[in-house]
Length: 201
Image 1 (cartoon, rainbow, N blue to C red):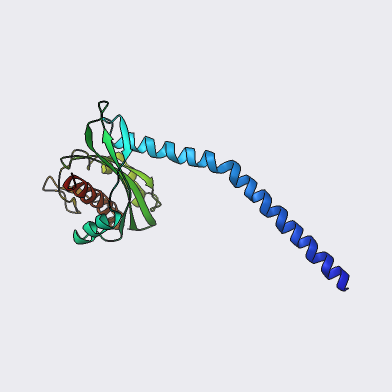
Image 2 (cartoon, rainbow, N blue to C red; image 1 turned 90 degrees about the vertical axis):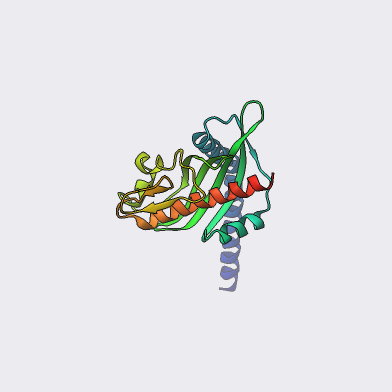
């Protein structure tokens, strides 16, 4: 009986060891392609929100200072993941592409890219991750909603359910106020991050 227990333990250990090795090999094989695909997705998103740019150079910034700027500006539950400087073919700076996440979406985190010119004009937004309710919050990906941000210039964007009456407003998604608020806060976080970057020049 004792020998059987030892034998079973050895077999289980060997199975676990082999499984671990195989998982490691699979990870090693798939890690590079996955990373390459993620990089491609990010590059495509950058180009989508800043078509005039030829290159996107990772910007160096004080993450703590940027986070404090967002908090001071009333942009909570929002994190700047990265900032890239958009440049034309001659290397001149055109503005920034900001990767930002807001955690207050109805279905969880909403991550998007926002392209913003040096003077604070929004070129556009592109979602990297969004899991809102189908037919409601997911309408955030519709052109009718996303295009409202294009060409909008404001220190902060406002949203309304009663029909926009000023140039710094967007119309909320019907039945998806939570999603609208989360997306708008993410965009406002990107705007504040760009204001910070410009102030450091």
